[in-house]
Image 1 (tube, rainbow, N blue to C red):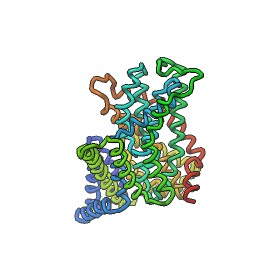
Image 2: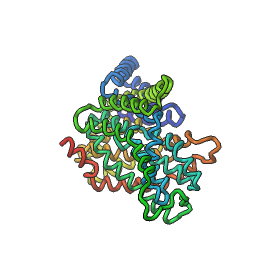
Image 3: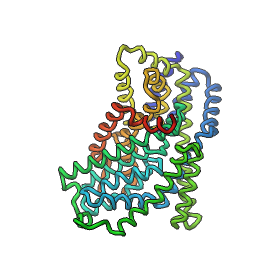
Image 4: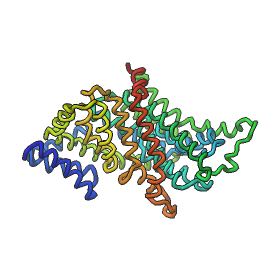
Length: 445
């Protein structure tokens, strides 16, 4: 079989296997194994699969992923999401649509200790949605806000997808974490502005209840200050993890370990973890997620190596590089490709399929790989709320009670305003790369 034709067949076979509903990690392995066996022999491809599986686990940097997952599991079961939600709500309660704004900001705050957009979405569906529905908030907008704001955990460090991008592209994870902070904050602010504009134009979306009514001339009650200060565990863990990385005290892997221990210690101090079972449950959940993610990682890395053998990435890079078009046109083609793939594939699969091809091309065209990491992650966020895959949408759907009356279609419809907002933020990040590069350049030179 011709190697270049084998590369094209490998991509087609992967898409067919995914369309048949095969788990994405197994689809990567099967597609790569069959095509690789035809190209280099099944003995050689079996050896390559074994090596890939070993190095996917044995590489020390990959250790950061399960540790960040464990940190997020301890934070979730430790009740930190509820604390973040209550604390932020105190600051926004005098604004119409305060619960929507509090949900958006709280997802960003909690994302700084969870690192998982799916976990953030599922938790806030259980924490915030009942509050909004009980006060007459529009149910489509409410659940759409939660599913969309859950994506903040992908951008705001520590982000697992930033770690995976750094491992695939051999870029500094510390720089990537720093690059995602300002764009993450910009997105949170954009959501808050959007919500305020929407509810002012259509007050029926978020009725102003008695608890939300501002009391003119009265200072914040001590109880409100107390509720806000209950957010301290989230701030503490975030400062320890990210401050340690930026100050050079920890590597990302060490910071993940410190973060997991800190989340466990906070849970013990708050008496959330009182028995051994309370600790075993988040550890088991983290192990299940880690196993699933590592299967995808092994399959994705194996698949990318098979693609490299076919020389398809090299040929595509050369073909795009010789196009007589400005570099910006090539960038737009890449973004459209990521948008399309985001609608049908999981994030790790997208990275494995595209990064070996796209990053060298864009670097040759003069684009910064750290900046492109932010753009690629923004496209992952957009894909997470775009049909038909929409991982965050299905995470929210899975966390809903059975009698909620909210369908998957309702969630997608509720995400539409926030999806448009994401495109506006994307345009800002493309037009002004310094929003992404200022902090990493300041911290790391």
